[in-house]
Length: 305
Image (cartoon, rainbow, N blue to C red; front, side, top):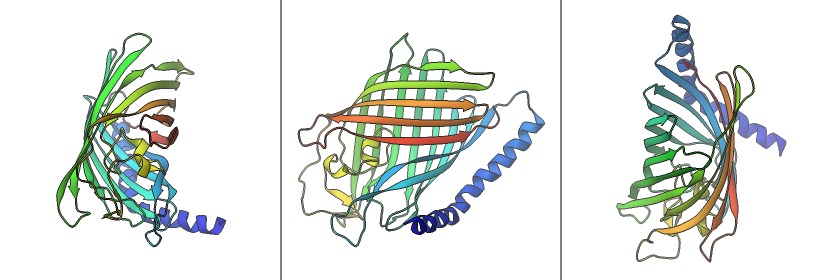
C-alpha cells in the first residue's frame, strides 16, 4: 500500500511540473520587481495550493464510488484596485486514474473595506475528461458575494450560477444550476506579533438552489466534495458523460436545500498564510443523506504587498 502511494505521488509531481512552471516564473519576476521598489507596490502575485477530497469512480465497475485527495496549485495576480485573475490546475493523487483532470481560469474583482467585503468573478473550467472524475455539463460560473460588516453579526449573501452544455444524451442541450446563499458571519482577529496574525471566521448559511448536477461551483462544495453526491443532486447525470437508468421529464425547481455551518481559520506570518476550513451541512430534503461535511486546506505566499 505504501509503495502504491509513492508511485501515485511521483506521478503527480511529474504531471504537475509544467503547471507549476508558471508559478515559479511569476515568483522570480515578482521578487525582481519587489527588489526594485520595496516601499510601494500597486499589485500582488500570490502562488498557492489548495487541497481537499473529491469523489471518484472506477469506470470499469458498475456503481463504484470512492474518493481521492485533490491537489490544486494556483497563481493569482491582483491589482490593488481589486481587479485580478486566477489560474488553477487540479490533480487527483490516487484512484483509478491519478493525475490532471481540470484547469480553471477566473478573472475577478475583490475588495475588503471597513464596512463591506465583496467578491465578483467569472470562471471557465477546462475539463480534461479524466475517466475517474465524475461528468459535469457545468463549465462556466458567475459568482457574487457581499458581506456587510455590522457590529457583532455581519449579514452575508450571494448568488452562484453555473451553466454549460449537456452532451451526455448525445444531444447538445443547455444546462444550468443556481445556488443562492444567505446567512451571517463574524470575524475574530488577533495580532500575535509584528508580522503574525490569526483570523477566525465562523458563519451560518442557508443554501437555496437547484442542485441539478455534479459541479465545481464555489458555493456548492457539499456536492463537489461529497461521496454521497448522488443523494444530493436532483438529476441523473452522474459519471463519464452517460445517464443512469432513471429518466427525468423536467428539471427541478429552486428549493432550500441545506443549512451550512462553517469555520475559516487564517494564520499568517509575513507573506505566508495557511488557511484550513471546514463545513457541516444539515439537509432539509426527506431523502437526504443526513448531516455531512467537508474540509479544505489552502497554503499561499503573497508577493508585492
